[in-house]
Length: 395
Image (cartoon, rainbow, N blue to C red; front, side, top):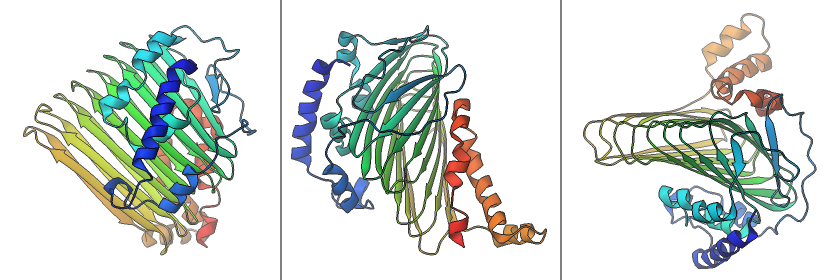
C-alpha cells in the first residue's frame, strides 16, 4: 500500500544502515549474537519471487491474509465488517508513531526493515471482529514485511501470525499495534523455520488505559532467530501478558529481547519465557521492565525457565528491572535445569521407553505456552512441529 508513503521511509533506512554499520559485540544488546550470521543476513538480496509453501486449509470463520513482501495482501479480499484498510493520509500519519513511542524507531533491525520493506499492511479494527491470520512466507533472499494495526476503543481481535521461510532465506518483520482504551488483542506468533533460515521480528505495542494485550510466541527451527517485543503502557492501568517458547537444536541461535515500560500507575505484567536448548544451540533471553516514578502500584512478574537438553547447549538469561516508583509489586526469577532424572525414572519404571518418556516430558514443558496460542493455531499442529525430531535427537 501507498508506495509514496514508504519511499521516504526506505531512504531513511538506507541512510541509517550506512551510518550505523552492523551491530558489534561492544553493544550490550548484541553482545551474545552470532554476528557472522547477522552479516550474512544483511548481505542477502531482496526476494524476487513469492515462496511456494504448503499450508493447511484456513479454519472456519478465520480471515487469512498472505504477506510475502511483494504482492498486495488485500488484493481480491473482502474485509469483514469492523476491519478496514487505512487510507494513504491515515497511513502517513500513523506509520512509525508506535515505534517512536516504544523508543525503537532507530534500532538496527527496524532500520533494516525500513530500508527493505516494499509494502505495508495497515488495518483499523472496530468492535469485535472475526479472527485474523497473517501468513508470512519467505523465499530465497531477504523478505521484509511490515504491519500496522490500529485498534479502536473496545475493539477485540484474535490475531495469529505464522512466519515461515525456506533454506537460504531470511525474514525481517516489523509490527506496530496501537490499542485504544479497553481494546483487547490476543496475539499469537508462530515462527517455524526450516533450520537454516533467519528471522528478525520486531513488535512495538502501545497500550492505552484498561486495554489488554496478550502475546504468545513460539519459535523453532531458525539458524538465527531474534524476537523483540516492546510494549509501552502510555498512561498505566493496562494489562500485558507475554508468554514465549523458543526451541533450538543443532547449532541454532534463538534470542528473545523483550521490553515493557509503564508510563502510568496501576499497570500489570505477567511474563513467562521458556527455552529448550538441544544440540550445540544457544538460547538467549533478555527481559527489560521499566517502572518510573509515575508508575505507582504497578504489579509485574517475570519468570524465565530454561531446559538444557545437551551438555553442549548454552542458555543465557538476564532479567533487567529498573524500578524508581516505591509503591510497586515486582518479582522476577530465572532457572536453568535439565530433564529431571526422577521424572524419567518414574515413567520408565512403568514400562515407558526412554525416548517416549523424554518426549512426554518435553511435551508437557511446551504445552504450557502453546496452549495459550489463539484457537486458530490448531490447524498448524504447533506442538507436533515444535517437537518434531527433538526427543530422538537426544539419543
